[in-house]
Image (cartoon, rainbow, N blue to C red):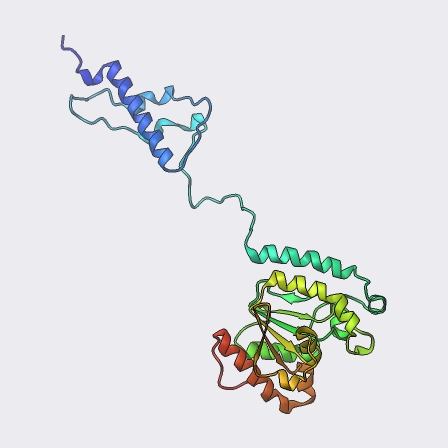
Length: 287
């Protein structure tokens, strides 16, 4: 009777099984696996791991490593990069900034610091746009259309501003738009210094969150209020005024160029000056 070769003895089979399992576990560890089921049932797969027939000393038996954990054992498999995963919370700055802006917007909606404005407004007009915008357009005060819709620059002047933005090769959604105050003054009068002061805290917090590189003040009221100067808008144009590391450019209000179409050229010169500094391509013709 011929003895079985040493490679097929139970002791050797057990050693091979142990080695196969160890290699499999090491492979899973390299793939990022850190835990296994607490009570895996692996006895049923032992025969499939080692070939006991036709084995000769020095030959490598076929080892089905993936079968170490079968479907009977609630197997742990390698991560599948194509499988859907549980979405993780988005902590990118734009989303976090919008959340912070929404908090301030709720405070604005409840504000009654300017009693006359609080009594006569329909909606507060907080601001709109990209909370991570490089560029902010800063207007005077909400008008009748803005008061009804709760959004700045939605009337005729808003359409003209949209044309200016599009002429720059960008979209309204790329910038942020706000005003000196958040409520419409009765009769569309200019906001008083006291009203501007009452809203200044909201404005400061908005800009601290958005952190724009550029602000375009639209019109004399916005320019004088933001820069805290009494200089005429015509003298403030054509250059940047630095405010807390923000480049501030002053130009005429869109409503003004609707009344004085000849001033459109001046506004476009101001916008081209801005675009060159922003690194934007300047079109040959505006509108």
